[in-house]
Image (cartoon, rainbow, N blue to C red):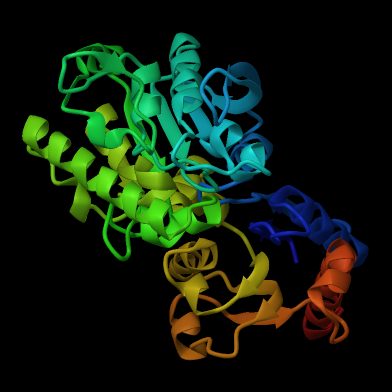
Length: 380
């Protein structure tokens, strides 16, 4: 083995992508100490995306005090600056853990996300990559837009800051200042879901319950998103409801398109583009990736499938090392996507509550044994 690319996702609840990459590297160097190892820990727009970019591209970490999940509260948030590109996780200031113990999607806001974007623009960013995932909000990105200059008005002409519970009060909005601020700037929302803005598969019905919404609250939030969509359509002609991913992060996908003039894209595609994964494939002998559970969903535009397709085109085998393998996995389809093999790293049948504390060590050992097999096959 002369060159191996490590591109793991996080092992949720146990090990982040950077930690997984380090464990994999340790397993390789035990058997092939002279192998060139390229670490590209990846994420698809959710938690850990900024850390992965900073590790893979040696960017600058920027720490800012911004509005947290609730208006009037402040939190310390971090984003990544990679030259003229800013990578921002909306969960850094509007994530579920920040509202733990008081979840309320009727009151939470994405205002802090807009403040992070504004700070990045002042720092010279011309490209904004915004990771959507892990949110505690359901405000359609209105708070984010307000922080960037958009003014929302009620039927009496009074301006106010909409949240999930008050979106239905919006009669019109003026985004001229936001558009001027973002002139010459590209905005991309990274998301790995395709849910519409509202309806049975929309933001409120599918995701709001985990944010603290009961049945009545879900119906209220869904109604408010419909009302906001009507206002957007009347003012711009934009049909955000049908956009794949419009319902991501409490409708923030729709907000990025409507208020910021941005686009929605699979997170893994943007990550691999910026880290030049395809360029790194030149001369590589193997790609190793991994995640907590490798199943049928992993083949639907997720990390493994994105890596696999590109590795297959370059003629490089790819191996998945996962905490668990789904019984329903279509192995023929996986192979067609460039995934050569997949293995569970767990050494004994034990519950997650026990296995989680051994993830790093199990991953290192699994990679070491894989390297030992490869060395034998190479005749060394």
